[in-house]
Amino acid sequence: AGYTEDAMVFKLPDAGQHAAALGLEGAHLFDPSGKGQPFKEWVVVPVAHADRWESFAEHALRPAG
Image 1 (cartoon, helix red, strand yellow):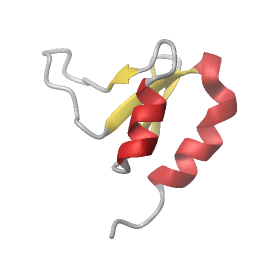
Image 2 (tube, rainbow, N blue to C red):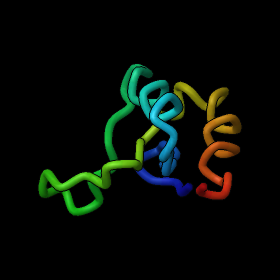
Image 3 (tube, rainbow, N blue to C red):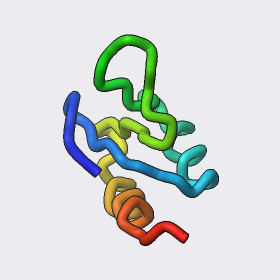
Image 4 (cartoon, helix red, strand yellow):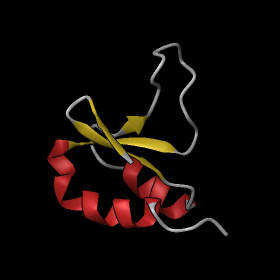
């Protein structure tokens, strides 16, 4: 997880959590280069949804497996 663009960025490998994050208004895939090559599991979640950040952070920090 990280902070950028007045938003939090989360790596969400769980398909359900990834879809839930992308479904939020203003959320989008994280493309740090700006060249149309977004990181496939990373989602930018705007501050308007700060109430959801803690939950996404918990999912992002879970061990893979």
